[in-house]
Image (cartoon, rainbow, N blue to C red):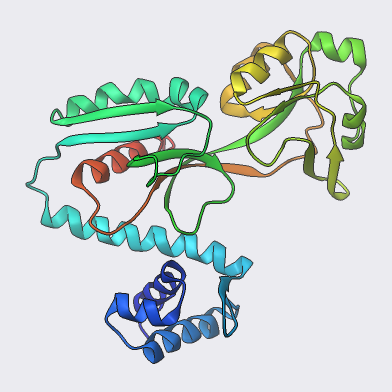
Length: 296
């Protein structure tokens, strides 16, 4: 059985929410689509979809495989599109949503090079740490930092980052340096409002997973605010290394509990559909992927 057809059928079923609608979208039969997905599960040795008479949902393995499938299918369509539109010139407006700090530190220096390469393209960049709705809010592309992506969206990974527990030397001298994650419950904490780590922080430590209930004295919906508070000795923060890496190197912030990790996060370029991707958006995504490619 063709692996491409199997992946295409699986993605179509997830996107459509049913085998019938997936078959209609693919111009195939329900029986053929069901067979492709079943053969795929048999070949992989895992169940990808939970099926009942009334509902359809992805398993944990299905979610992970779906992301890989969408990236592969998107890359194939983009490669075909590049061949058919190689002589075309990109033009028009691209609306982009990006996190505030990442947008300032890592994206802003790139826009000039992109605009110079594609002089007929215009960019409208909105910085916000809120996860926007691409369709309802009218964005073509969003940059998101997360460990989990919505199945309905297409994600191209640009980079990886990790969350770091840290505090200022002054704070640690005053309150002591925690030796176990559970001790964070007795410390002042500055918490980031968005995302999974608000009042409960979960780590993989030497003895396995541990979850700590913290009591933040300050909440902020922006990482720079959390960083500024930590630099002033106001408590412990859990922030990405792209934000506080310089502070760690200078000694203004000190990493604590390095054996307790939250897992890596991905920096993703997110867009709504891989079908009929405008040339201006395809070129922008490819440009960002290239810009963040690790140096050889």
